[in-house]
Amino acid sequence: MGKESAEVQGRARLYRILKSAVAVFATFFIVIGVAAVAFLAADNLKTKQNINTEETEAEVQKISVFLLAGDHGASIYKMDGSYIRDLHWPDDTNILSTPLSQLKGVRVDNGKSAWLNSGFVRATSTMFRSPDGRREAFIGEQRKDGSIPLMLKYGNEQDSRILRVDNGRLLKDVMPVGFLTSQSFAVIGNASGTKSLYEFMLGGGYNYLTNISEGAVNFSVVDGEIYYIQTELNNEIMKREPPEKIVKIDERGVKNDLIDDSDYVILSYVCGRGALAYALVDRTLFLKIEDQIIKIGFGLPLMILPDREVVFSSDKKIKLRDKEGLIHELFDEGDFWLFYLENVEVDGNHADSIK
Image 1 (cartoon, rainbow, N blue to C red):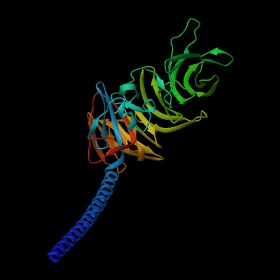
Image 2: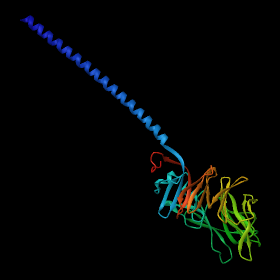
Image 3: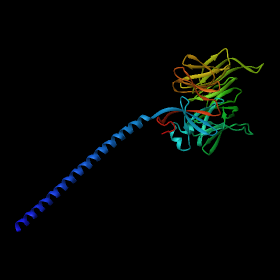
Image 4: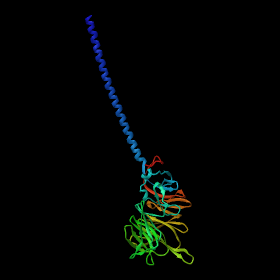
């Protein structure tokens, strides 16, 4: 009896030992299994993250776009004229490659320079804006003493400069030309019986640049240099007649004839990026690059893009002549102002998303 009891107790002790060992081994394999699953899951997640990162890097691309501003807001379009999306103030100011105050475009209806104010609102004033976007200028009304002030706006502050030259003589018949730099403004005026071009420094002082002949029209400033059309006016019939020229005045006041057309009146022009596009009175459109003149077609030039691509209006369409010489239709003509933006980051998989 005692012997059997000892055997039973021995078996029970062995059973408990075996049971404990099985539990330990089971726990060990479970821990190993969980660790393996966790490792594989983490590796899979890392792989997916790498794939997603590569996809994101591939999707986001920097492209050039057009910004169209109208009465009801602003929108951006790809270079082929396809719609991307509307812009919202102020969140979308971060997509602009240029500060809003420095962004210069063109009025589609008349080809004149255009700027934007806060809210992507079109700046409808007749003021000129400095290249750094910090100042605006316009010519004030003539005062009782005959002086004509140059009015300057800096934010909400306004100041004026009396335009005097040649030992304090007042400048008369003043016509504004535009900012040559952020610190100087060009005007045409008469101080001694001759029309002349002057550069007035905002901090004081002036420079005489050159004389201006009668019949000079359509002045513009591009990169600190002045351009205009020199016309011939038939006083008997009060009508412009050929020959006409497009003239450039550099920062030293030296004139250079860029175009000399002996057969037609020159209607309009745009210049920049080492090129000049101009239209004759019959709207024949040409592009001049260095000494080469290329006939584009018919229309009115609006702007010149990098690679000497030309945006122009023709047949109630806004068109683009690309660097290969091909013509593309972009938009229907309308009541909007056109701006060009470089290096805008666009999500390629979602045309309505801007990063």
